[in-house]
Length: 117
Length: 111
Image 1 (cartoon, rainbow over the protein chains, first blue to last red):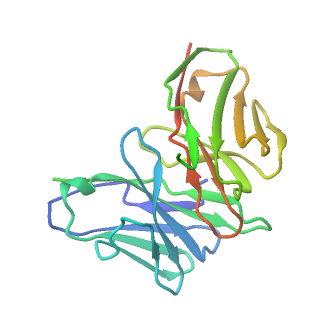
Image 2 (cartoon, chains in turn brown, blue):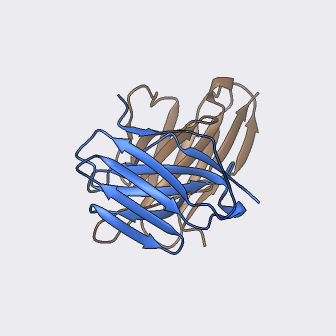
Image 3 (cartoon, each protein chain N blue to C red):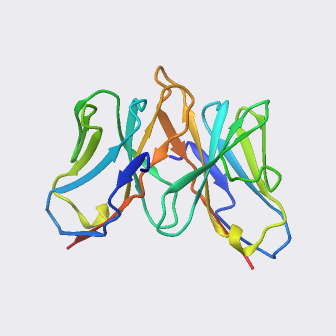
């Protein structure tokens, strides 16, 4: 079964409104979660690294004031797209590495398809 | 040059064929190598991950890593229509570092 749950799976919103996407690790604690964006027929591009109890780290070109990330607990990270515009329409996916000696296993949420109209 | 290069395809094969998917990379700091399968409008699903150079087999899937050539492969034996999906290679440095993905190869297995 899924070890990372993402909600909602799809959302349509009006331009100028804000949308919150949740990412939960279900059976493990995740001090770090990653947020990706994927445009049609493109690969996953890292947007930011979410760290529990501290500020997120954003990739170059990603507006931190537009994409607000909160990692308030060891099992939940949220991404809020503020003042959404049509160009923000995309597939947003979170992932969390599950521990283990090599900390290599990264599990992904189901993704959220955001459409801004 | 992108850090990870992957031919996006599309690749179309008959059922039962052996499929070979490949990626090259430029960053020698990458230590872990993964293959993900992604169905349309879904999150990626981890198929295989490897650490060292060599082969790793799991059922019909074989992952191969050649660190000296910075080249990784995924082989799918006896391919099935249900294998039709986009296959993404991904790699990472050590610790809590993010994955860097290839563009993905879209595979269609025709019955």
